[in-house]
Length: 279
Image (cartoon, rainbow, N blue to C red; front, top):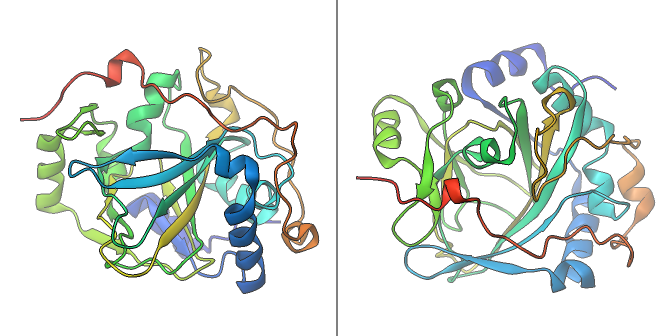
């Protein structure tokens, strides 16, 4: 099937670096994704915490290959992959996926960063990379929805390093300059909505100070022609086998298979991202 983007949305993606597709997955599909992620024993065993400067944590799980779980199938659907191929100008492969779970009152914040600020150090020469964030819950300003700087992808890659509080983020001096001229957009999403965004878009999120959790799943892709020149903790080019858009409903609440072994167990940053940065 063709890309989900209309001609106008394609122009907006080039200009802004992101596009929201409402009801990317319908209510039934979102319910299946949510239930599978909540109950999958392999995923739960792989959960880890990322702390912000105040010590509050976002719970996360990361997996490199989509597999045949219902959430793996979602990342392989034509509606998602064909749109990614439109965005990135050719064949893509699954770079990795991750759950970001901000629990009520205790979910942590994320500092300003670009995904390519990290992925550059994994041997990806070009920023031919993008992600789609799918909301499993309502995401609002109050529970820490994603914030994006409109047009920030046009600034190119910004140096990243360790910030106060030990998170790795973008050079604050560069971010401060961007904030003077670029619109800050709160990407408030309903369950099932998808935010497609370029790997150089500057983004962050606040702590979850509300009584409602904020769970999202992100599917990340790299262009096949941008195969990393070195082995790293995310995969080099692996052909992505697309599935039909009805695969999610057909699968039901399907977990990862016991022999998939796709979940990451180690999370050390490369030396280039262990330097301190900032004013």
